Length: 125
Image (tube, rainbow, N blue to C red; front, side):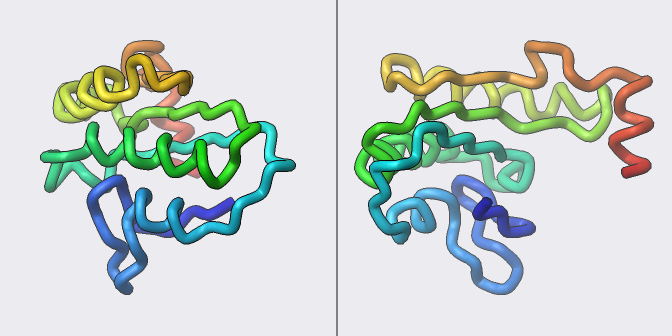
């Protein structure tokens, strides 16, 4: 697990933690990894330009770092149903940028993961 609060595809963390592509390129190569799951995007909402390109860079770097891994990218997860509209363009951009990359893209927005009922539990967690 390499999560770092406040980071995103193009957004550095509050303490200067690098963005996703930079962190992926800094990892040691490990051919034993069979599955890599990347999730993010919500922290990039304030600066969405380049998110799709950065997501593609993460997948490209993952192919070098984890050459045997199946790569799954999960898009931004809106905290409430009302926030899906703001995140939908970013999710669509990530999906377009990853088309043909061999990575599986899962959109929580398109899949309807967040509902009024589920968001109550999400926000209470």
